[in-house]
Image (cartoon, rainbow, N blue to C red; front, side, top):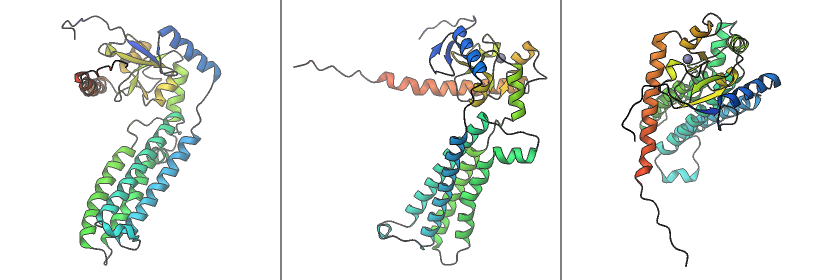
Length: 293
Ligand SMILES: [Zn+2]
């Protein structure tokens, strides 16, 4: 590791949003121009069907967990274990299906956003996963708690697991970065050049300038179209880039310096976590090569 920190502008490693490969600014610009000319749009039918199938499965596991908990469904192999084990396993399967389904749904909404003309409908559509989270755990909690014949121990364990799963599933089903059809169309109309975003999971904004001051500490950038940025969960234009381009009233931007600082802090934490997990395997001793006999 080098000891010297150079205060100069950083040369970024740029990756293409289309191919995932390392690329140059020029090549990225060509890809963006081509995508705009082709007018190709990703279909979201598969993502939505996947989400709905997984959500139905989640509720199926909930029903099964309830039937096992009240001993209405008791196959022979369950006799060998305490009752709470299959109930907890089924609730965890319920949670896994819910979370994956909600991620697919959110992804679809970023590729093919809904109009925000009707605010209530817009919120419901974007947070459908949250409603499914309620349906996937609350009936279990209520029905089990009010069942007179159920074992008190299973009532207690079932309630604890289901409430925890409801909180985790609900939190991960909310879209914290929703985007509307109008927002996406305005951004796509105003920005037809390459945009850049950080390669970390926490980044929320995209940039129209690769040399933007907020990217000085970042090593790797992804380059693509505005459409690709929004699909990658970068729904707002960077505050500084917007000012530089005079787009602050045309395109949805970050709310200002406060949000920029917050995003940068999140990215720093993310990078620190990533570097910690990356450095671990370096300490392993290399495997000795066995000479061929
Ligand atoms: Zn910027």
